[in-house]
Image (cartoon, rainbow, N blue to C red; front, side):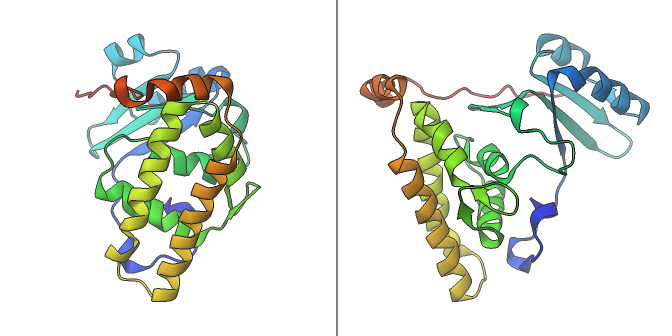
Length: 216
């Protein structure tokens, strides 16, 4: 989030404590080697249990934790990444970066702040680069009712908190419009047959996962 904030209003700044990396399955072994050589200790049990999708490392001397997500970002929902990792970019695309925040079933203030910051600095368009790719987000939500339910609810929630941050009124209005544009783009996307079938069940069945709490 911070790497993409060319302008950073003081009210949207925060401390960043953990490091998250995304790699392809093919690159996971090299990532493990790199982190070990840099002094990070792997969480042996967790990494053995989740070897295909996630790995944890700790730097006790500096109080840092590293999450490595393999091929996808999976917490409350699964966000596919394998085909979206470009070696020339410093982060995953903005659409996926936003989704990693919005897929959380219980947002905290930090997640709301990061979401507002991302839409403060970037328009919602039909492309990657310096814009949030609304087409990509809409496509993923149209194929997964559970993801749609969480993402749209969190977009609406974050929109109501735009006024919590000390910003110019013109900035607040611009951010709110971008929330509306993204919600509209998601709503307009034709939904898959699987989405429609799952929608009939609705909230009677849990539509999200509860991520595992991990301690050393």
